[in-house]
Length: 431
Picture 1 (cartoon, rainbow, N blue to C red):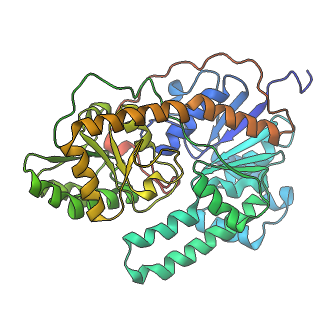
Picture 2: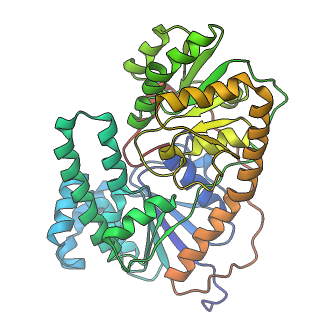
Picture 3: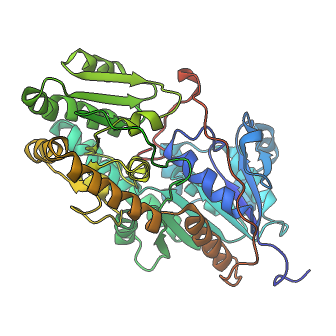
């Protein structure tokens, strides 16, 4: 069968399976796979067992990369010695020989047209691939690391700067080996281009499931501010604590009936302790976040650290709830500040913007309606998936135009896992 007729054969390698959908990296991978399986021959390989194979989109083939495959593989003999930068990256991130072995062997015989490596850590395996590679780190690590300074004492800054420098040289080395790199935010992509001039670096924004996160008939609770996020993830912990400690006392003093709901899985003790403050409620491990969003008079996203694109903004806007976000949280999104969402930076401005919406429900509803219209126009998963397919096709030397494809199948909304069943990693800067 000629290349013009045969479906594009894509090998997607990730650190784990894309389920449950309570983490930004898994959410992103699931929906990209959901589209790719409609128009390509896609295989997902992970260095673990598939515990939720039945949750994968129909048509996705599965490979479990086993540790024993590494015992018969000598990387240097097969693909040459790594550079000193690649050796340093392996010491920092950790190198799994079984992944290197699998990639070298599975891409040597022409079984795949292109490989997509998902996540910052997996970029180091580009040297093991014997066919074109697209790297999908999602977030830019140098930017995320430098932003950590806002939440760290100055004594930690030298260590952060050294780590940022390491990430920059590692990213540059990877960019030189891959056909393209994809970030979820144009800001992250612009940062990556600083140390990789000439590399093919693009941004493809996340979508949002507009059917799952849709407006409801439920009236918002007057005076309720809601923050949503994984509460064991450092940028979310910093944002929730800063909001509760620096902004909330001002709003609560103006109206004692107001409440701040901090919603998310696996809250750390520092977050749980916020419930001791007047009007603060910590809602841990809720089975479905949509009722919490529907009840919000305002959704607050006061991120100060992290990188990438904030799915929590897209989900709140899709449910037609008014959003106030920090410049860091809004970075990379196409929302019009002041029209689709409100932007606040600093405790005083945050208190003023939240007060504006809490005091004027009509103004809040107008903002919410514009936010819903924005995500309907700019953040559709089908468009995101098609952009990924085009990037993969071009990397493989195929035309970017797509063959006829059937509509993606509906998926079942995620169920809440036991708190101990999911561990957040730094693989993705912000869920």
